[in-house]
Structure formats: C-alpha cells, structure tokens
Length: 376
Image (cartoon, rainbow, N blue to C red):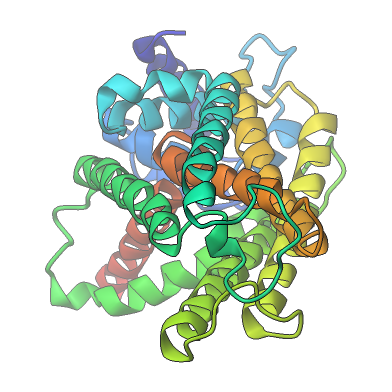
C-alpha cells in the first residue's frame, strides 16, 4: 500500500470507531481519537504510535472482518506506524533498510563479523600471540583486538546511531507536538512527564482493557507485556555491565576478562539471560499469533530485531562459557561483530519504536493534564 492509501484506511477505520465508541475503555487510543475528529496526518501518526498493538479491539469489534466495514484497527495502525518510521528516518536514503529488515540484519552482521576477523588477523600477529589460543589471563581479550580498537568499534557506530535516532525522533515530535500546550506552566509538564514515564515502564496500554492482550487469539494474556519488560531489564543490565567494566578498567586498573563473580560478569550474564528469555518468548508469541491483525512489514521488522538481539546475547553468553578454550578469540570477534551491527542498525530497526511510543505517551499525558486543568 502507498502512504496515502495507508493514511486513508487508518482514517476510515478510526472514523467508524469514533462513531461507535464501544472500545473506548480498552486503552488510551480511542479516547485520544475522539479528541481528534479531523484525524490529520499528525493525528494519525500520533495515534498509530500510541497504539501498543494489544489487539483487544480487533477481537471485540462487531465490525471486524468478515463484516462489510472490515474494521481492523491493529492492522491499519501497524501500517501507519511503519510509515511513520519511513517518513522520519535519517538519512532518508537508508529508509529501504526498514522495508528489508531481515536481509539488512543478515548482511550487516556478516559484514561486521568479517571486518573484525580481518582486524584480528592484522592486530594479533603484531601482539606476538597466535590468532587463536587458550590465553585467558588478564588482558587476553586485548591481545585479540586492542582496547582502543574495541572502544572505536563501540563509539563510532553508537554515535552515528544516536545522531540518526535523535533526528528522526525530533522530526516526529515536531510533527505531533502539542504547540498550544507546550510552555504553559498551568499544564504542569513535570507531572505529565512523570505520568508518561510510569506508563512507559509499566506498559499500561499492553494491559488492553485490564485483563491483558490478545497475544495469540481471543484469549487474554499478560505475557507480551512481561516479556517486553524482561527485554528492557536485559538491556539495562547489559548497559550496567558495560559501565561496571569501564570502572574496573579505568578506575581499578583491571583488564578483562574478569572473574565470574565480578560485577561486569554477573550483570552481563543476568542481562544476557534476560535478553534470551525475552527474545525466545516474544518470538514464540509472534510466530504463533493470529496474522489477521498484524502487518507483514511490522512482523518482519520484529523478527529481524529479535534475531539480532538473540545473536548478541547468545554470542556473549557463549564467550563467557568458552572463554577458557581456544574458541575464545573467534567467539569474541563474533560477539563484537554482532554488537557492532546492533549499534549500526539501531535507527533502522524495530528499536526506533521505543522513542516514537514514548513521545506519543508524553503527548497524551500532556493532553490529560491539560484536560483536567480545563475541567477544574
């Protein structure tokens, strides 16, 4: 479907929902839609990213297929959401990555791993050690790839991705920003931001109307919400492990690999396990889910991102298990290559939805606070 067709279908379906009103208690989406009867392009982008795809409305709707109205809000908004990623991506020349996510992840990951294998062949002989050996003492990782090379492998792609993501999110905020409320002290923006943060962490809109989402079919479940929170926890623990390793290296003068009971290893292990559990659980749900309310382009974006996270977490845990064997060097290169690909592809993967959804929740929270003020 073209972008105008996607907008037209989302506008048609939400127009029927506004007239019906049956699903207004399910989540924030329908009340927000009723406050925006014009359903402009900015409104549609906001509503699409406010939707958490709980799918309750699809299974509850009396106008869902095979009814002649064929109202399918999760599908229409999933396509609209994907279109918002394409519209705001930077640079725009890389937008096709979002439409071919699996091929992009495979080729970029393989390229990154091959690049690091090449660097290993360049640096290892200069260090006076075999390319593949069983050296696991302090500094062993840096005899495979120098510490400076590892730093640049992280800093350069992460810096690029932060710039690209920031530009995309700023474009989206500019499109959907509630101009009439920003800067008005009576709106209490601090209170609105705290409310939005609570919604982000609790994933309140993944509760559906309260009993949970329709993850697989018409039955209710909280598993997708819990697994999303597990994924977020895994990323947080992995980041904490990186900070702990930085403190060990620069503050304590200790070089990796660290002991099993050290903070970097314990945090990294817990983070990797949490990521694997979340990826496998979300992958199973995505694989078994009813395809009717799901957009194919969104499903492939999900699968590609989950696959890349699986490779990053799995290679990291494999490196921990076999770091005392000759497999350490190739496993280190595979893990760092997967991390490099992950950093490079952050702006062109499902990861970007986190910022769009957070902005949508902030705007919705600002609207709620403003409405309470107006009614006071």
